[in-house]
Image 1 (cartoon, rainbow, N blue to C red):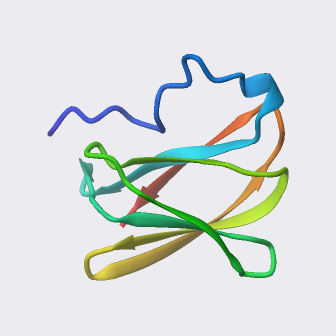
Image 2 (image 1 turned 90 degrees about the vertical axis):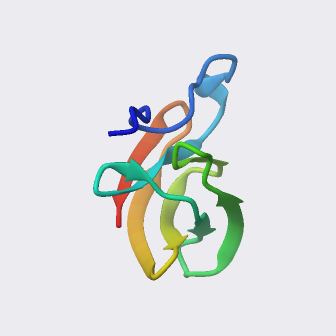
Length: 96
């Protein structure tokens, strides 16, 4: 086991009460995966994309509402639906 921190990046210094945050990590067999995570709006339209960190973590600042996260990793694509609200960080663990 690599000891990667579960969940998304540390929220220290982020004004969570005034933000809508979607974050988490992408893993395979408990190990972090390098790749990208896309944020798609309720209609499936591309909104943003970020690379995962060395520990498989990602974060988006979005508007409140329904979103799809699409993890793009070598050999696999995985979608997760989330509902984000202002003032609460949505933590998403994506296992591929």
